[in-house]
Image (cartoon, rainbow, N blue to C red):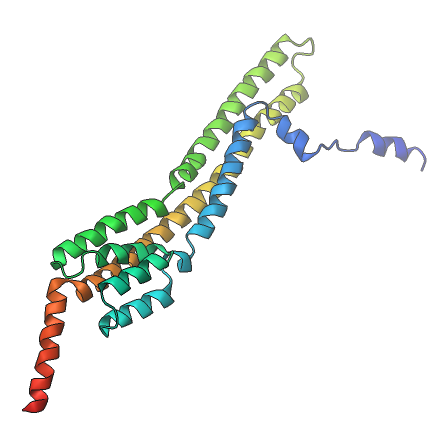
Amino acid sequence: MSNLVPIIAETTIPTQSLFDTLMAGGPLMIPILLASFAMLLIVFERTISLRHRRVVPRLFIERFLLQLRENALDRNDALERCEDESSHIARVFAAAIRKWGKPAVEVEQAVLDEGERIANVLRRYLRVLNGVSTVSPLLGLLGTVWGMIQAFNVIATSPAMGRAEMLAGGISVALITTAAGLLVAIPALIFYLYFVGRVDSLVMEIDHYGQEIVHLISFEALEDRETARVAIPRRKAA
């Protein structure tokens, strides 16, 4: 029974910490780790910035459009409401309100211009996220190629040439950078696709509400409402 103890001790599998494993990947692990840190920051920031109530708060929109339909707001009051609201849709509404009473084409152009600026704000940092998903695997591959070159050089100049365990150990260390690059790139690509879809959805919603306000404050819309308001008392009198 006592003879088993040395055998078990000799067959114990060597282990190392995560930090030691990462450091074994070589200097190219540093930009990969920096890319992962940048990815985490961008994901956190975009998750907060692209919240629905931060971009298109439904309560503000419903109240604002209802008051416009009921003629409860004039131009100055409506503009003040928009400037007091911090959401992105309020900026689009404010751009439209500044064209109050102008032809529908002019109001719509103001909505489109401001909407384009808002879309650029919503897409902020997404190119960086896409860049992380593209560059990280390339850095990992470069680290692997560099590591394998070093491993083969060590084997070629070693007096123990032909020992398979030395070659396997060098290759396993070299492959660490590829694994690390993929571990960063895959979630970065998933988050990029998710945020792009979310931005497209928010932009479409902003465009929808922007078209609604065009039909409420343009010259043609105001003229139609005034005509309808004058025609109703005449019908009652008849």
